[in-house]
Image 1 (cartoon, rainbow, N blue to C red):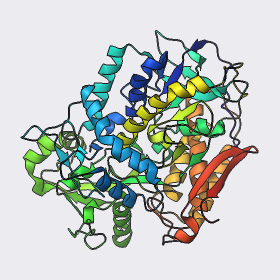
Image 2: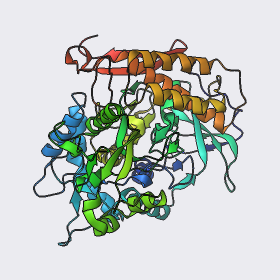
Image 3: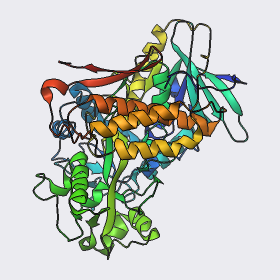
Image 4: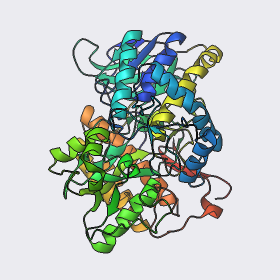
Length: 541
């Protein structure tokens, strides 16, 4: 596929701002609130303000808030989960600044669950050796954080454009990011394809889970920010590390799209993973059993499914009792009952599903990408915090901390930036037929999911190339989304083929061992010479 800007009509309108932020999850909302003193801020979101991934977060936000915990302990757990590929400076920044950032979130109005003594109630999740997960509404943490931030946004009177799909970066004549093109739907705001001119562009577009058939991500998570950055020539890193959440409600063969997540916190409170014979198969596989890091648990589930020929495994939380389910996990309880399963009396059928991209647009510790004037935070970014496998509940914290760091860096960055030159959009390239979206998802789930090998990844590459050779189609939202999904799928497969080892959330059956001698570095994907190139950056090649 040629990584050129998307084919689209010429912008029919233009608005100006100092800073344009793309996305309305925790990263985008916090960045908007913290940047409002730096000039005019415009927040653009793909759907409605509260329809991003943040509102779906169940488990909570990790931070060393307890007296028996420390940033050093949180650092150690994060580095262990990242399997040798975390940027230790980035992790240290996260865990050190995290507790104060959570307290500032509380000052903005977020209400976390409290223990009997009034302190924030904390739980454990996989990979954590301490109770450090703050939660709200039992298992509705993301919804509460979103509520509080949206209320603060409304009070701050920040300008917003909803139902706007970002298309591509626009540049000035020095090659610096100077805004974005976007397509807007809905009444009471500019319509059709237009452009936002800005001195800084902040991507907070979330994930790319819709590249797979089964995912916990909402329908809007089509990898738009990563695809935009690739087309703009930005460095994108660690895309092979797509995390599959171990416990997603199994809805039967052929189920597609967003599927209900069964939070890791359920296992943190004592639920067990069992096979259909009732055996706890994670015992003996890892010292933490069901609370091992997510890649270990997902692999354990897939192995047991393969050993037994079962289509799914089971999560047994019957012994937790009705009160625990009703008060600690009301959202999960309602979702399960909606699909005909009562966790109080029945074991929950579960499978792994695409959940989180540990890779993304490469940034420094202040969110700067390799394109001047372009910043990224949240899931779309690769700060180096997660390495090969994200530690549970570090995602909300990363979005919070690094959004604040972008806001802190912007005044000096904007003061030092050259005077903006001529605003220009780049000519567009071809589009993928919208009907290929299901094919992309099928290819990725079959060949680039939890289990990978050379033959499957080669097949994925061939099939994705074939989809790119289809006849030209007319511009439109469905075609733009399919094109973005195709771009990120192609880049994921390229990185997964290149990394010939098993590490974290990247599991190669034909290379089952970790290989630090050859692969203790990172794979970086860029657009160059009319195609994507993936290069290794590390101590060896």
